[in-house]
Amino acid sequence: MGAAEAKAAILANKTALGIEFGSTRIKAVLVDDKNQPIASGAHEWENRYENGVWTYSLNDIWTGIQDCYQDMAKDVKAKYDVELESVGAFGVSAMMHGYMPFDINAFYEVSLNLQMNHNHY
Image (cartoon, rainbow, N blue to C red; front, side):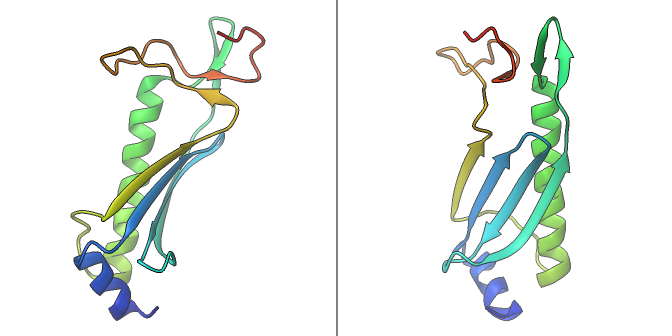
């Protein structure tokens, strides 16, 4: 897909944004309606040992996703000279060795627990 077709897909919301929380980076990839990558962004992060567990803080999560998205939106602007205002679909994937427990009101209950910890909840 050429730049003109990618720009048209962006403007028509014929895109999907995928965000992946990896162990060392948060990655964002925007794909067109043929699942071809057309823009991407990333944010480096690292877990830390706090209170006897390896974790990422809630602030790390929010700061990281915002930075990652901004990086991807800058890529869209640089490649297609258009501001990304919306996407057609959105998905999130998280690392296979961690989880983020939320309560019934979607409040974050504890720090992200990583599989490398030996005290599974």
